[in-house]
Length: 333
Image 1 (tube, rainbow, N blue to C red):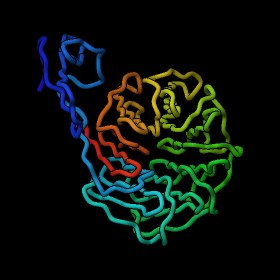
Image 2: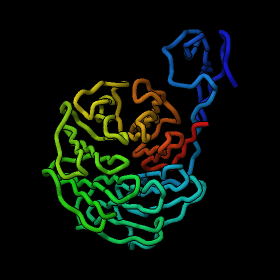
Image 3: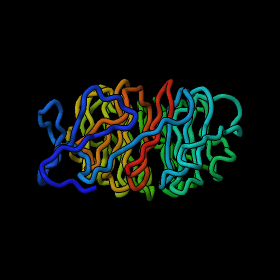
């Protein structure tokens, strides 16, 4: 439904208890939120009336990592101290992976665009890969203090980080791995769609980027207590979160950075292929979504301890997880 004229339209957040009514006020070329009669700054919501809606999925668990296929149909999630779970129906039902043995301290998972290739890392354990949508898994590399893992669209190029260790790169679907860079307190890593660009961030250090599939790395940007990183498909747009700080965005591969949003306990960040739709989670806060490459942000869902987020290729579907909570899926419709 199109909005026309100078009038107010109710704004509804799914699964969120509003303590007071909020409305859109549409004025030509402007969209504002009216709250208790005052006009607040413009919000990043479309004037067509579409918005994000979230649905609670799965049972309570120590969820640490999630990822999604390009269309949001195949999802993968991992819980610390327990199992990997897979959904092939956009999160409606989930199946526990039983082919990787006993309980493991899973920290991160990644999935190829088509949902066929998957990889996961467990703290104090190995890297595990699957080439059949999670039906069977193979242990790779050595037992290390693995923190995060990310892959290219086709699943062939992967990067995994070890906290207080190095970056490990594979270009053959995780069969063989090569150590890169130096021992650092690596916190997050992201791989572009074609696998040629990578970005990784370090606690109380810099952001590091690679433009040759992880062979060489260059430090960029300011020194911050970084804990989350995301990258657009072309590698030009970078997005990073600072623990108990701000979100920072770059449109020139990390040469220059712009501070965004407010200081919060950010836990994770993810980007669509074009770097237009972004989602970031807060520990003890909300999910924040931007649909203009990080310029403006809007809170959604409820205050929870969000641990990880992921967004589909086209930026219309989201999956997020909560430590000692549940999995949530979001749809822009």
